[in-house]
Length: 274
Image 1: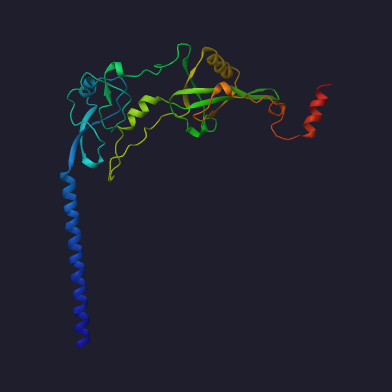
Image 2: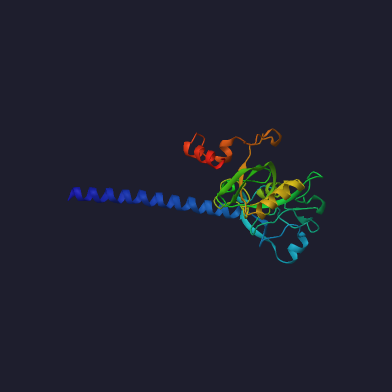
């Protein structure tokens, strides 16, 4: 009987400790929830996608700008808390639904960079379309340099060669180098983040690549499509110099895809030359 009373007392003591621990954690969580709720800020966000070039006044009038309460720690630094002073400014880039409005989101019309700003007087913009296999799996970004390989099939014969090396990428999808940098600071922060984070902008249609080309290069690319050529893109390193590029011209690159001697191929070539 005595042992039973001792056991009962021990169980009661353990239960009391567990209850105390539970109450402590509950109160602690309650304090954290209250603190988080108090440390909120009302920030300006896009309630739906806002096209580039839209004035802030128009966006506000159409209800495309709204205020959202978020934890202060989740809002990107500099996020606007009012529409004061931006009514005559225009969207510097296409703002995604839910995107935070920062000082770089709306700028003066003279600050909006056109795709062709900075182009040499002898160059122009042209787009090509490639899938992931032919387009470096979508890793091409605005500002990169790429080279184009074209494979042309005529009957049983195929010719594959570098067509244009070292082309500057002006944009991918509808994203340019300038809009990419600006948009990165206006992406919604992930919930539960302990510090404000900068997320890379989402680029739509990574297979649509806009390039800076000369008129002659534009004609080359257009003609490659006209004869049903297959275009491949290679991603060039930052130090790539198209002027020093050595276009492969050895016989092995023209008639033999294997980097070795193949007697049957040599015999066939010899017979066809007779």
